[in-house]
Length: 392
Image (tube, rainbow, N blue to C red):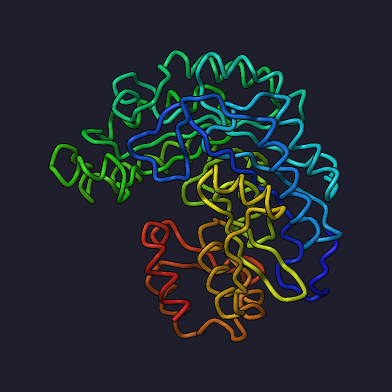
């Protein structure tokens, strides 16, 4: 990557990525607070593709000289797009910046049989990694989570993904209502037995504004208590460690060499363009590090792009002190931790040695080779408190 922000930028080697948000879903899951929308009329993919191309060109004009190291098509449900639309987006990115040989190009997909049948088309379009939103491996849980696929369809999609792509991942949600540690152990063991190289394992959170939030408020949905949730977390670490998929980030587990490069770019505080409705970006420019947010509603984003050439609704210059805090918050999620010198370069002051020593004494952080600082197994579950202490 050619970094136009200067040779001393502290995260210049973390990479440049592109995130593309496809905001449409076949249905809205009751736990989901993402920017996803259900449209019963067909989506005009040609019109949206033209808008994606325009916004890519606009952002590329603000970030010249970059080479893309990873692309992530997220949502929403990007696997609702036709392969030709995906190919058009990837071609536009390559024309705007250029893409590194062997760059990671991921597409999120839902494991319905119709979408699984498109996988080979996505591979031809240039996608080389798929991330499947499985969420659970039993039909009762899938129904309660509002998923449209069955467990058997999930298994079939995984088989197709392994045949179509060099790399794959799937997501599971745990700490579901009435879930026991023994049941989760069996389910996770079965998941890993499906030749998994990468798993994203998320505790169910009850987000305001979602149907689950209303059910929980009415007492009709009862998530596990803190003690049970911690037991489920501990089972997650134990089963994955034993299977050779340790956590390289709090919610992500992978075999050696199978970590998501795009996610690592985020957590290492790299630079990325956010394209599409509601997408967030972090761009390093001569004016400083910028945070960008595009128009959230799909139709409003589309109209803005067609009028202005882009859908960016907010641009914020991130002060150095705030950059340091973001770097700390993101980097300490990783098992590799952070380089304190990079934190100091961003923040404008070093970490407080006495606070670091106190956290080490409490067994919450540790010093790694090269002086890096990382959260320990004891510190990871209380990471927010660790970050708050270090950032104070």
